Image 1 (cartoon, one colour):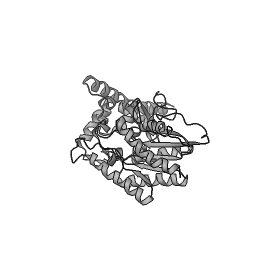
Image 2 (cartoon, one colour; image 1 turned 180 degrees about the horizontal axis):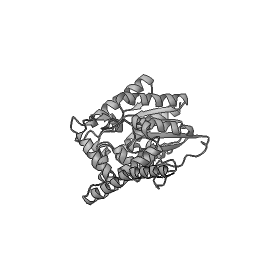
Image 3 (cartoon, one colour; image 1 turned 90 degrees about the vertical axis):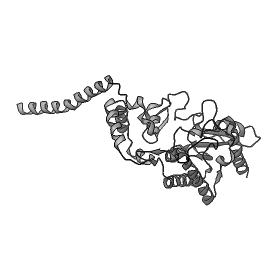
Image 4 (tube, helix red, strand yellow; image 1 turned 90 degrees about the horizontal axis):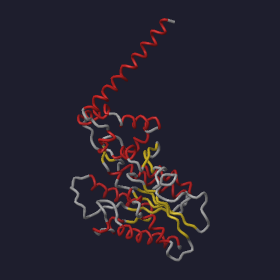
Amino acid sequence: MKIKKNLLAKIIFAISIPIVLFFILEYTFAFFGVKTMEKALVIEDDWRLHHMYNDGHFTEDENLLWRGNPNSPAFNSYGFHTREFPEEKKKGKLRIFCIGDSNTLGNLKYSYPELLEESLNKNKSRHEYEVYNLGIYGYSSTQGLILLKQVIKHHPDIVIINFGWNDAVPVKSYTDSEIIKKTSKINIVMKRFLLNSRTYHYFYSIIRKKSNLKKIPRVSKTEFEANYNEMIKICSEERIKIILLTRAINPHAIIPEDNWRFNVLAYNDIVVQIGKEKEISVIRANQHIKDKDDFIDESHYSLSGYKSLIGLIKEVIIPNINK
């Protein structure tokens, strides 16, 4: 009995030493002004962590990494900036899902899915259109594919896909698909704890500075193409019409020639090529929408840009629906 007590005491002592040391370091780093990763945004070189843990509009998700926060008034119970999904689709209604990144999500004032629904329903048609905004800030085609698999049960008639910008973003860690494979509920809890740790931030910063990790895109061009082909396959099997959009790029933005943003053009080229091979409608938005006033920054449309985009989308939708 005495041996067991001594063993238990040794175990407790062994466990307590690193815990006590950790808290001593935490208070020491706090005294000297070392910030937590969450506040210091060392996350800067990987905005995925920002969206997952530091942006109140979004919440962690073990399948998608992050999604809209259902507790935010800006999102529905699924985490989308749109109306709730009804249980059944009423006869005569044509349902359109717009899946993409921040250029799809838009802002609280306007978005292209919202304006598209309004514009389509102004036309005299035997259909009533309901357009759902399933865009999420920072999403790549890898997340878009997972999202499509989740929402396909709501029976859209048309799916509009728009990715490419975030796929090209360089990171010094893992690709989107690699991170998703590693993510679990336990992993999310542990990561949040570490992001609030000054000790973790201090040693993490040292390791990052000394590491020679090469930057890689969040989604490689090969995987990007595979993601699009899989989304097309899913829609084809469900007899859903699919429309592909190339990603917006402001031609007036000043971007250094060696900047990763130029790689977005290559991802757009992949979208165009897939459209040709699969005989799918591709709207080359980046070639049609070029006016300075059509953009609010290097990659997002203004209200006039969205209106131009809606015109292009309607040119594809209306003739196909009326066949």
